[in-house]
Image (cartoon, rainbow, N blue to C red):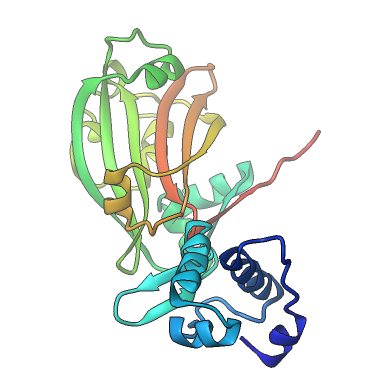
Length: 265
């Protein structure tokens, strides 16, 4: 803490001591006196600064970690969490721009922000359609779909888990049904006149859910305690009104900023 923040600190005597410390540190982060990536003082130093005990300081830091403002690094200390690293922008125009690059949406978006992304295909299999996917694809609950499970990274940091669901009757024995990369991505295949669909994508509908991650998601995405997860279900419509793809994306809340640009006619 700086001398300025110490002078500004006026504790609310009605709050427990750990809450007063947490509120002071939270205000310092909001005001920029503690900056992203900055290391906090040790528990002993904070104890002396606030005239309290290490137990009280530890409770205050735990509260801010649960709020997603701080992160602990083993053997290094406690740091102010970095802001989101990738802006995910959704517009019709940038979908067409990304398609022209031959890269996936995420890879093209990262590249536009000066970052290098990569993806890993985890599995490709045929499964019964989950109920929410079947509903969006207009299939019966027991219909078979092809699911392509992928993980996206920037450098070595996992950024997204994405499961793509496709009607088996449309995509069986196509490149979607095989574990290799698809040049230009699945969207290019959908719009290819010689492909299994041969129709133009005209609309996306995204359902956004914010929740806490499951234990497998915490492990796969290396999500720190207290950080929520955004789950986006995106349905792709072609020009005859059919939904031909549902993407189920799980995105850690500390690594992304969502931006939706809505053109109003």
